[in-house]
Image (tube, rainbow, N blue to C red):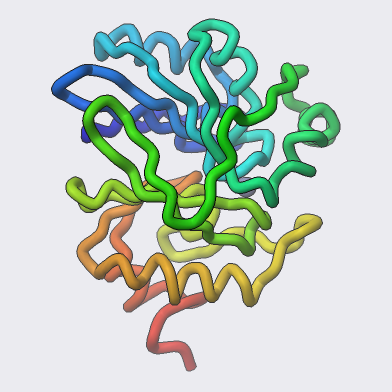
Length: 213
Ligand SMILES: [Zn+2]
Ligand SMILES: [Zn+2]
């Protein structure tokens, strides 16, 4: 699978296009906003949008979902149903953070840990990684060694857990027990900031490394 990161919204959220090079069918992961920018990238790469994937339902990740769905008539897959209250509160979120007014949507498929999502002839594995939000999921492309981790972990940091429904210990467990188990060599694209590898974070990330204290 091929990946292209498109930073969107005032929060510079890493919306990612991923596609099967054989069929040129694509998924857009976390279309938080700036839909014209996302549309331009889809066109530029010559892709056929097949679905929308959501790691979690914070406004900077999900704000453009209804607009893209209306344009392409494609299904929305994810996040886990634990994020239903964030989806229902999307209008409130956009007000709170000064985002443009967003349309309502409901996922066509809620995802569970262990589910598989297809993109063309490629597949992504689903890991339920709660903590930042209760319904946060991670998409893992095993053959490319690449994970889309949303706001679970960043280069040198981890997701906030001070929002309603956040849980610090749950987040630490998600990272250490689920993500780190994928392997040190796995590269990841976080929801914000530069890419990294799980091994690098395991060694150096002050929140979750093996060498704390
Ligand atoms: Zn978030
Ligand atoms: Zn975010």
